[in-house]
Length: 327
Ligand SMILES: [Ca+2]
Image (cartoon, rainbow, N blue to C red; front, side, top):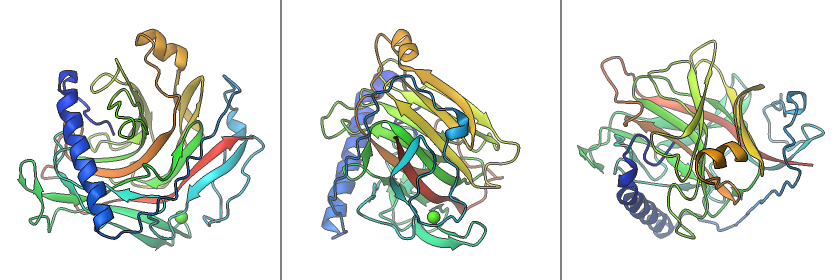
């Protein structure tokens, strides 16, 4: 999702402070609101010391055809470590991060405290799904960096609750699609706030990002010291149809030696630690636990802004998020 995609690197500290303030405030408000806030801390660290063992596609997990909630051993190489099937929204897993400060990217939406997220049954896949809904109306009571907010949406983070190092991290998503929309499934290093290293030193793994002016494309990217903002490592995948037509499984496979990106069973991008280190003065920072983020932004430097063709509301559907470790 990037904290400041396309923003000048020299603005990083300012952006970080803004982000930190908004994030800290939202966490404070969450706790004051009496939310479950269960600190059922599950570091879930998956250590994989077998370096460079890129997994053959034939052993990658396949979707649970039942769409149900049964944790299953999905291949001889991967074991399900943790998952959220979204039968409900669990505060043991997620925190709503709120605010309308633009999130470092001049975004238009206000992220509400859960008002734009709910679960529902999707008959097309026979499963309960999380819906994150970006809405154009009813935002007058929220203040954004440009005035009364024109859009509301949700941003859910697993920080301090579910954090992972290495493994296969995947989500089955059906994306929104309209000019100005910017859904993302991504990860940030957990030393971002709890150690205070900030961004991009904490590292950012974008498993899936879509911007509305590319109706069939999604991206995977890495941001870190020396390769952030407008200059990440980034790969692109193009579907045969619009991203909002079907569910797809968006995934990374991550170990000490590198990261590979997949859409369904197609690997479309990879970066090794060596490649990143060589290009960034030893800037590989993906050797500690990361937390997961799911959000739908509206507008920003990268997607640009809604226009006369844009339609709202827009929904991102999340059948599940699952994390696997190597056996
Ligand atoms: Ca589900």
